[in-house]
Image 1: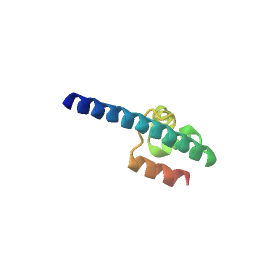
Image 2: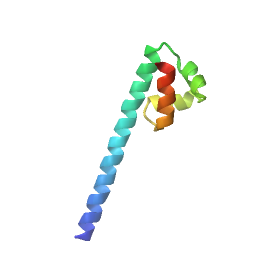
Image 3: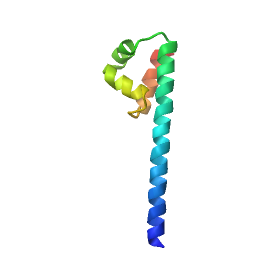
Length: 79
């Protein structure tokens, strides 16, 4: 019974990790759309955020998680 509980806990961790990855992808797409809608290039936005272009690209593709403070800075710049 305790093994079943451990297995269930592991399943929950995998599921939550997967949904977090999906959320990172959605946020990344929205960052890209907001950047494009504001008429900015990746180079311009990265420079204003004090980021490398590569890191911005990773955010836009959902490969890196964006912190709340970085999202706030992004919103201020593109809006």
